[in-house]
Length: 165
Image (cartoon, rainbow, N blue to C red; front, side, top):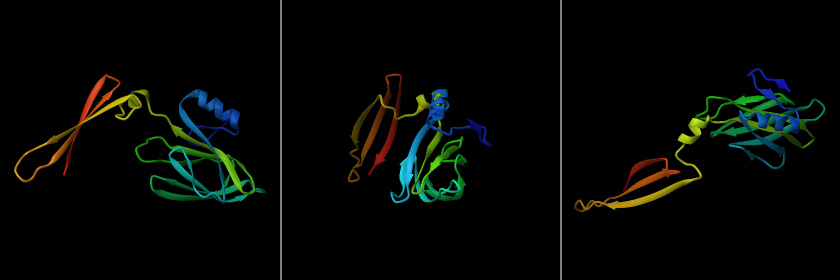
């Protein structure tokens, strides 16, 4: 495996991607995009293949991330494309390993959240949501308020108060 200028390892085939997955520092999403299919969702971004040059092992790709669209022209195979999305301090890495006449295959590398930060996220799979509707009777201006309790696996309970009306 080769190293990029950002210090990350670049996988050149599926076996090397599996080795990187076992290291556990990043999540890897493998993809194959075709020119005629349009934009395809890969992880949290959309990737669209514009053109390929099989003789020179080059491609032009369009990436849509966080409502921002950018095009990378005439990139070489195994050349990483780094970009940042909102809220992340580490860069996402897009690498294309194989180019054919009408398709390109590669992977998207996304940094994993630290374990402490993953547990602090309010929306997890094992959550309990309870919603109470409260009605205030203050004259003609009768508003309905919602009080939402989130219970994260019984450990901590957070409440969010929102005014509706």
